[in-house]
Image (cartoon, rainbow, N blue to C red; front, side, top):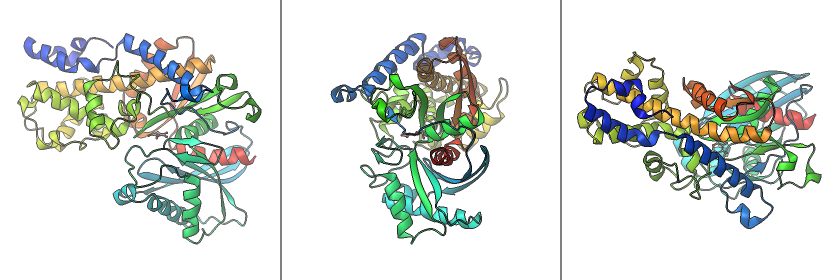
Length: 464
Ligand code: BGC
């Protein structure tokens, strides 16, 4: 990353003394070449540990590196109707995929969860899922005598025991239910359906997958070269196609081919301190006041659920240093977790020289009347630098996966609101990846709602 002082908006600050203070305050947003190299090395080491057959070695890594037990990508000859359920954010989704010789017709509906459901007993969440399934079945007039295959995208860290069986380790993101860890999400779902007295059509819950696996499956439906599914939403994670010989934890006799779909579950990367060399004060502060301090280090450095708060923390630092908002700010600036990633993506939508979007955010945060022209520029630069760092961190980890895949051409399917709405994330990721994996022709592409659609596709692939 170029020196902070090179940024055009920083160069426009008139006072040399102020410029110096700004550069000092923002210096830790730089993700240097050295950080990139070191992170790739550490990531590779952690993969080795996570992959080890020796339990003591495995404990040295916070990566889950789980076999998904999904036997294949989408082949293109699947048939039938399947349901996908997608739980991972407050936006629970039900997806119907109707396949005719591999051609999919997809219908998606959203059923938001309330704050009470997110923080009460887990059963409330699963009752909501069962109730939403029934609403969907009724609204879509689905009829069937035979059980409809269901794939369940449940996007929280779990230990995967088989295609269907998995055990939740901890809630993440906005979820803080009073129970759940230690339980199997598919069983919780089946129990909730039973509590309802069943659904109006029979269903067969076939698989629990992560949203990354769903995105990889949906990605492979659109692009046969897709070998990575990436989530850049509230949280983050990736699933990729690994050579079986590189995945030591699975007995090759259990494998269905020489390739295996691995759910990296990379959010907790760094919880053991291996990323301390590059963590900055902003990441530490966000973590300290988050739902689960001391956990999900990697995810918290760029996940959409955290970026808004990080932006606020950066601006508070500049304010307290006396170089922004006349050192004063507003109550909204000082309120933790009030800023969302929406504020980040909105500011980033301003092109150089324009400030309309930034002003709308400053207005929401009661900062518009005190912001000077230099303040506006500084807010934009802080947002740019923080976003660039975030995208570079993701690209660094992706480069390691691309090296593992080791194919001349690889497509990366991406789902999640951060990637979808951030106007520069794609560009920053591409720029760094081109440097890190020059011999791979890669393509990053949006797979909108891929996580839920992919769950239905898993049910299809496993049924065919
Ligand atoms: C979860 C992952 C999930 C990711 C993206 C993380 O918080 O632990 O399982 O894939 O978010 O939604």
